[in-house]
Length: 474
Ligand code: PMP
Image (tube, rainbow, N blue to C red; front, side):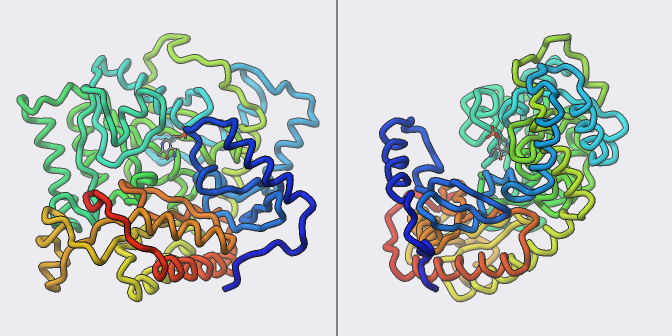
């Protein structure tokens, strides 16, 4: 396939380069997406972004999984315009407004049974990480305990508490538990057996008085680990986590920041297991592309004092209107079902593609959260749990998973970009190419995405020279 070129020579190409140059001169070294995606978006609609240089891209990053309806969906724009034209105040702290009332009604109509009838919502600061902080404070207040149970490979945000709950925890109050992984199973078994062993490890840490586990205020879990490399929580394992926490009076906190609003093929990610969490953390898609985050929890946990968790920006009226319109559209158009069907089809095609490439170690996902793990087939698997005693080795005499190849993943991302496709990288070693397209993507668009992606994979696989990494472990 031809590399994308602008249809005409854009007069803004010079401006485009200048903007990028000034960005790298003036913005923080901590900037992220801007490094691997040197794009200056000026227009966008649905799956498509147009850059200032006239190039068009199919956007499968979707604001890091925020844009359930893609860019600038008409119902979202209409909802925003309606608020603007109404003369309603845009800043209202946490006061009641008709817009907020409608948002809460819509949100509550989507909640899993078991939480729906007894839900409370706290409007917190506008980012996912703010909602995680609020949830942690809530369960610590409600239980009077300060420990936290969190999982390997987790990602919950960048503020202190959320960061501690994520994979690189520093906080001694956090007990790290194994999240089941099919491909790089820490127990070397994979499947139901791996999930069962992970559950037993959790149980034993909680019940062994000498395990050194600080009394937990809660367990926080992603129904599908996103940043950690697209690992769906097995349904049975999540039910076990529910039973284990319920039996010990430990609130279960589902971080639905990335999995919510239809993304995984059900409206909320926990619905795959039928589990009702005690607390749900939500952001991204619930704001319909604008900043908004909430914590939803069962009413008996609502023990904190007035002002226990405050903030100036808790009343974004435009985000609430956009979010309510997004959730209603997803519900009315059954876009969660659509994500399940389309996601399964895309996964199937990618798994077919993987058979032709030794460097595609694994293809996995749930709904429209899809990951392709790239490996270096020329290097030996690590000789541990993921190595020779891996189930693949037992069954077929084949070695276990090859080491991760983050360099190849980066090369695939760049080849995708050259072909007008924006993809995300994630995973423990940044070796997982991630797709998070809008739920509104058509069949034809999905085909175009897969064509560009397979072309990019082919180009990267042919030209990339593996870099020696320390990768390979989960
Ligand atoms: N939780 C999960 C599961 C996430 O994926 C993210 C962001 N990727 C966050 C929390 C943090 O959200 P934010 O970046 O809006 O703070």
